[in-house]
Image (cartoon, helix red, strand yellow):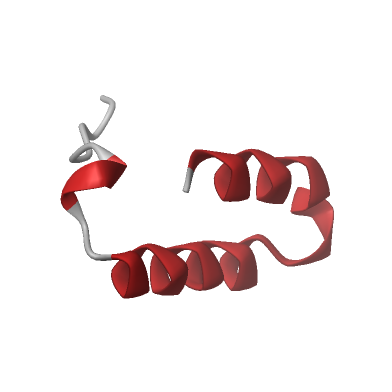
Length: 42
């Protein structure tokens, strides 16, 4: 099941940065490519 998330535009900028940081720390080293896609989306 895929969790639907709100479009990024509807969030304040600070929240977006925090989300990006949280996701990156969760990925660790293996997620280099994923990190880039996350950052691009935000």
